[in-house]
Length: 260
Image (tube, rainbow, N blue to C red; front, side, top):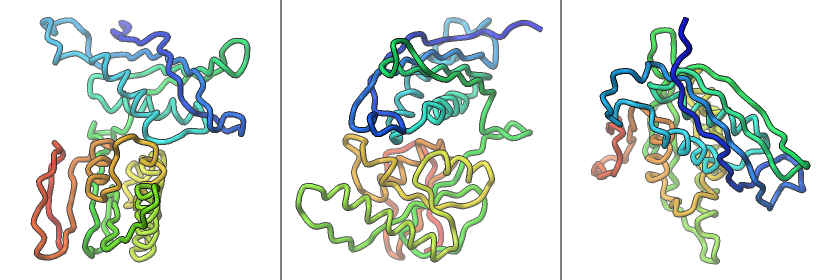
């Protein structure tokens, strides 16, 4: 059996905050990334067409996405996230992820993961969730559905922390929604991905994943769009109050209005 064609990223160093120890909190440290991707198909015959290859940008963007989603305690968790992002691309067959801390010891300490095509079932269909923006009452959904809450009529006091307060209010709305529908609540990507893989609905509490993203608004609908794009959702459903017009959203995710 022939070895697969590969692309790789070597010695990619970024400063980030990561780690479970108290001494690692509130400070950035250097992380070194080495990624190797086995291609699902050989490079032969791509006719020098950039649209028919796995772009190197997929590798760097997977790292950027992993670091942007939330603060991780473990290198292993971040490496899993990066691997999942890369394997969501149809041209990626297997990925080797090596992630190292360069400032903890006189050398490098880290982890290497090897993962094959992820989030794909036996028939080759990706586990793409439906994201449901829950601004109006709906019945409890079934299947791989992630519900994003709304907090209508929220009064956010002024004082310099309006955005964080608004995000925490959406977390409260998420827990209230979960209790009302009898659903679990997740505040991190690992739990969301697990629920999708298990084809069970779950409610998203957005504060942890979005609080540190520069420029991210604490607007419930904007957050729903952001999550749909991050999770490569098959569709974004909008449960809107009766009489509310469908919004014009800047996204390539298919939109559908559901019963209100």
